[in-house]
Amino acid sequence: MRQRLGSLMLATVALVLFQAQSIIAQTRSPITLSVDATEAPRKLFHARMTMAAAPGPLTLVYPEWIPGEHGPTGPIINLAGLKITTGGKTIAWRRDDADMYAFHLEVPAGAKEIEVALDFLSPTFAGGFTAGASTTGHLAIVTWNQLLLYPAGSNVSDVTFKASLNLPAGWEFGTSLPVANQSGSKVNFAPASLERLVDSPVLAGEYFRVIQLAANPPNEIDIAADAPADLELNQELTTTLKRIVSEAVSLFGATHYEHYHFLLTLSDHTAHFGLEHHESNDSRVPARSLLDDALRDVSLGVLPHEFVHSWNGKFRRPAGLATPNYQEPMKGELLWVYEGLTQYLGNLLSARSGLWTQQQYRDHLAEIAADLDHKPGRMWRPLVDTAIAAQILYGSPSEWNSSRRSVDFYDEGWLVWLDADTKIRELTGGVRSLDDFCKRFHGAPSTPPMVKTYVFDDVVATLNDVAPYDWRSFLLTRLNSTDFHAPLAGIERGGWKLIYQGTPNGFLKDFEQVRRTTEMGYSIGLRLNADGTIADVIEGMAAAKAGIGPGMKLVAINGKAYAPEVLRDFVRATIDPKQRRLELLINNEGQLEAHQLTYSDGERYPMLERDQSKADLLSKIIAPLTWTR
Image (cartoon, one colour):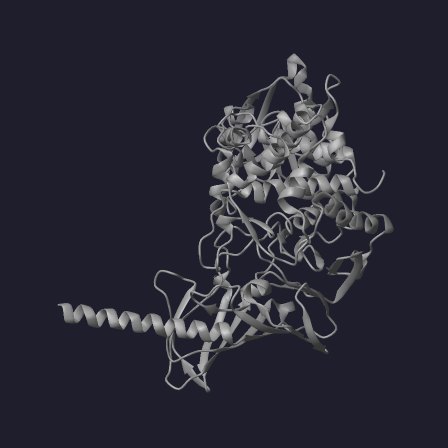
């Protein structure tokens, strides 16, 4: 028995040594990665890798936990054509039975390197906000983690890649990844760690524009569009984008990048979202977002948000999100800082730069405050759980959002950090603010890209350094609350009140126009899509009491065919005691049903009203630092 056990131990040690030898070979010799994106317009990428490998067992992995996406979102379902060879001979591989992102193979004796070929099948756009759609006939976002494998057990900062990219003829590109040289449509990049490679996507396109925003350190915006007309940018907006940079640098007092690229995709055929990187951001918005006022109001706030992440998220990062590789699960408990503080600061920059007017800022704030104040899900899921459960909540459907809650740490983080900002100003008589926290936590000295981790106690300690107070209890109370009402103290301490009026505010009008929705959540408790399909119902309000649920479709109101204005007219009329009953004809999976509502308060839409009994701290908070309006 002992002899057999000893043999097993020796075999195990030998296996570990073989794996370690392969990993050491990888870290010492750069992996070459050649990406052919010439077929990007038909949603197809080809990748080829050559990597050093020692004979024996080897496991290669596909990136699973993607930085900034806060979950196991690596799109392995779109990996195809995987073939591994050495010296022209195919090496058999087998996917791990439990880990779908791992591939096992045996490197044959005498081999010194292997070649890996794979294709990536880019998702097609199906409308709305389809996750992952990143190519059109005229542009593409090249996301490196989708196009490679690397040795299991590696630290991504220790593995070096030497990448090249072949683009469609005539396409231009932008990226923060250093370029070694370019010949025609082929770009050769300087060797970089896998960490930096994945952190440096490439935006490329047929219709492309570059605008310099700052010189020291360099900042630029690289824009790709599906049509040349969408690239038009007036001088006012150009100046505003420059102010985003100057206001951010003034806010933090230092930078942690050597050069920064805003990578902006203008398209109605890609997913719409933003993803942060240390020296760039991947921001995708509707095609006419530079030209249309409503789209600008709703969409372009992604640019300052993702820019803030260079400081808050990429430089200062929660320890649970700073994993050594892309296979180790991330822990999101501090996403209320990573994303919530970024939401607060990004929106602050939108106001300070002039991207939003002060009224637009207040309208945005009123809308998110009202939304969070109408979420029955608050009574069972505290804010901290939305952060811990982020990896599953990002994929949650819109139906029953008010009862489920989703990634509320973004917008509720805005309220919590506004609460903290106004509290600091109150405690210090206006001498200090959250700006001082940012300078201490994210600021000097300026550095190249690097990661400095933190835990909850570090946040508390820095707040105490700015203004002594029981910040631990302050934060924990808000993180663990199951109160039905949202934390509105920051708005109120800031000299404003959340109230409701009979007409939508400017932001809500723009939001309904862009997203093609109808917001009746604050009156009868219904949110509807353009065709009358009910997107959500707020429990406890009139529609829910009448038995209406998400997924049903509103056909008629009081005998008149549904249209948004018809519904608004009837709801507005309910202030008349004779018109307080509404009959909604509902299509419930093919069955027509009449639902009776009793309601008496007319239309209700959120807005902020000035509280003259208090100082107007909110206006001071959003005032510019570097220019005069």
